[in-house]
Length: 294
Image (cartoon, rainbow, N blue to C red; front, side):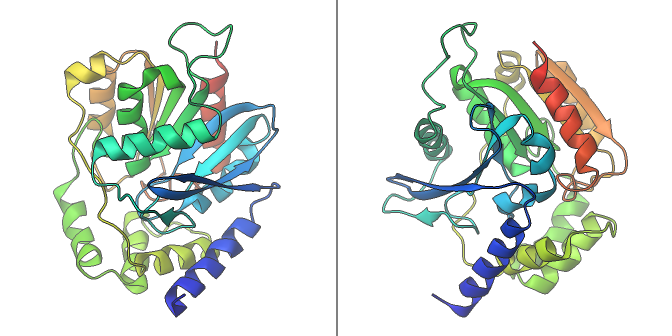
């Protein structure tokens, strides 16, 4: 184990140790590798699966789990190939189909991917799925592919779902993409969050994660309006009003125009990268109110 990895794992465990609820650690095996899932909340609670944004880990939900886990059984996933405690296997993920197949396997391993529960309406799956940023793109594209597995969908400032990136954001991110360092990751985070207060332990973890080797991020095309209009999954789209990533109002308008069964809101005072943990209590409340609607 390299010194960089040792430091990263220590920082990861330090953030996880600060989660304000007891957690269970689960390792699910598949041809793609071993997926680490951190679970919390009542075991008989309705399941809510969390997909983190790109470049982060499942620990990013540290400010949300106390509220969400009061009534929900939370499953926070580390994606294989990215920083975290998941491990790559013999079969690499190379395509969007592979990514969706991997998520199929994770849901199956959690007992959530077997189709509707008895008594549920046809087409309503066992799990609710919530993703942030790139995790929201994965969640949306998966729900379009396998709607029978998902009951409800929550998208937090989703990228590449309804509109593209701002050119200024991509230009600002370029040095970090070309030569990632902890310093560059910290500076980029401070710029995008407009200097918002960020938990120091998580900020350190975020910097260390940037310096770890990782596989190429799997990306795909933005869903076409025709695909979105065919969605059968009730969806909540929450957007960061101060996001530097994209035009939040444009994203909201596209989601309203193309996505059936969608509720949307633009939340002021939130940036893209700070969205999970700044004003977390209000965010959790909106998520739970949506999920608990009949």
